[in-house]
Amino acid sequence: MSDAAGDSSPWTIRWRAVYDVAVGVVLFLVLLVPATRQASTGTPAGLRHAMVLLLLDLVVLVMLSRYMTSEGRRRLWGPATDEGGEEQVLPPTEVAALLDARGAPSPELGLVFTEDDIAIRQGAEDHAPLARLAWTDCAALVASEVEVPDGAAMVFLQFVAVHEDRIRLVRGLQRTRGAGRLLGVSEAAGAMVWGVPARFVHLLPPLLAHVGQYHPHVRIVLPERRRSPSG
Image (tube, rainbow, N blue to C red):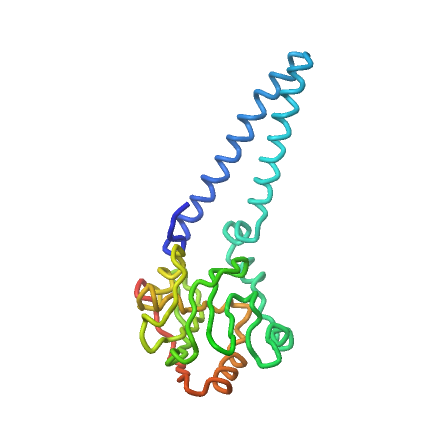
């Protein structure tokens, strides 16, 4: 796997998926052929070996099936219209359930507000924060709408530090490169960028309101849309 998935083009990602599926099919056949040969011997030892190989083959088949039917694979191979259909924008009433009583985001979104700091995670399934920034070291919150290379528009929230050395990074994570390049900021600054999922666009007003109410020293900037440097 590439160590900078955020920098890969959709074409590269698609061909990598083809390669992964091909490896899975080859592994399935590599196990199936000797299992058939062992079973054809008719001996107890041969049948035992065949059963072991078939069990391993079943594991490979299940993993391959789960890989092919995962959400990411369906979005990758499905037409653009299908992808848009899956990314239905949640209404404000459902978005409200993703906020606590103070209007802070739910941790599963990958953006965490505590009384002391902001934490951004690698993804919803990753509980380790990618970076942290204390509210006292946060100078501004910049909301940007950027046109990405595939033509779609993405909304980002960047928490700007008074100085980049105030950002506490988790080493070994690569997502910051893509966000930094897309917004034209450094990798450290990119660590404090949260990409707003398209279906959660109604989160923006309450999130900005929360920051304005509880952290009034943070300047909120709403710039106009700007294109990606590669666009």
